Image (spheres, rainbow, N blue to C red):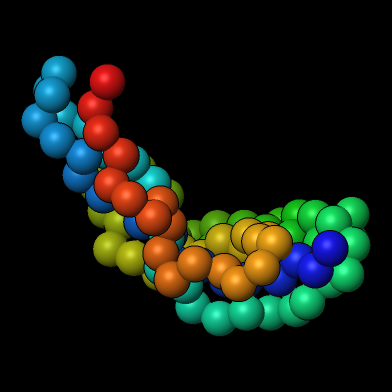
Length: 94
């Protein structure tokens, strides 16, 4: 199966006011990096890319910080085309 490795800019979006307010993680597609023809190599490449990104972004505020203003990235693998945004639909409070 074909897997695509892609970069996403991650963010935390406001979900709603229930129980003092809640947030969820989201991402916006930045660019596709590589195509892998087996899942094992795709996962290895994703882990390697995320380790490098953590080292490069270690001085930026974390996504859950009140000082965060964007700019953190993360690598994800997808079977088929990567989505423009994730999650595809806004989650609901349960």
